[in-house]
Length: 320
Ligand code: PEP
Ligand code: MG
Image 1 (cartoon, protein in one colour):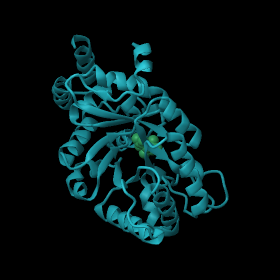
Image 2: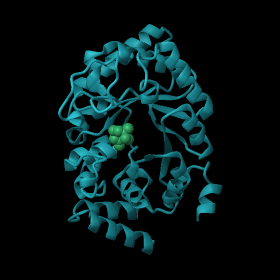
Image 3: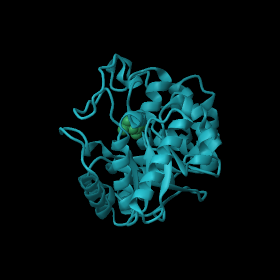
Image 4: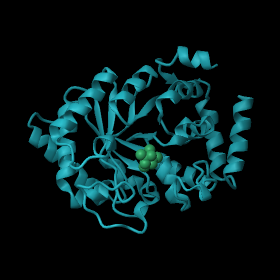
């Protein structure tokens, strides 16, 4: 099975009943982008741009960012890049972003929330992204969006970057948000007319939905993306998006075969994983029947906990 997955790594992933699911790679550096291409990823579903900003005394300027994004694009040979704007905050302090210490950094100034206080930072990043978007298919996504006002302001900043670039809107430029805040999942219908896609960050969404800090071993068992409460939030996004916007998942859960099955069943049509997990994730999709997966997913929403969800999904995979 593994050999088959490797052999077909570059082929598209389509379920047995003909539903196409994009399988992307999560990338955190130009070197990762080369791994993504070699793994057969259809696209980069998440470019974490923090690598450009961490461990230095001042922010990279537009030219430096442009060069880095172009390097990523070169490694990808025309595959789409989903560029996430800077997602740092209290837990990842930067010397050139003077922020007060926070008692609860995960609930504080991070992600898109920094755009208001440091508009130049977002403006520079968006200008670099727009420049590269004239040469390669580019999706821009904003992290930690909690309100429509944040998205509207971010889109305005993107429009300003397009105006500053002066060449018009790059063909193929798409715009989306990460869904990491539970309220955003529940309000997805309000966001849908303003985005091309939603990308659900199950790492943070799970942390916030279950009030269990990611990376804290004392609550690791609680922070389970297969908790029916988390799946319910994914379901809310898929229902609100309908045919209007693509729903992706770029958290770790996308690489778990059981979770992938349920996510596709709920309506997710792009899974983005670490590069080594791409071939296996494509293989999982190929072995799925989307109609059956939808039935399993509907059952999972009303299961009494993640263990029951896992048991039901495991038996579903066995009987298929
Ligand atoms: C997530 O929150 O699931 C995600 C993909 O973003 P990050 O892990 O970078 O916070
Ligand atoms: Mg996140």
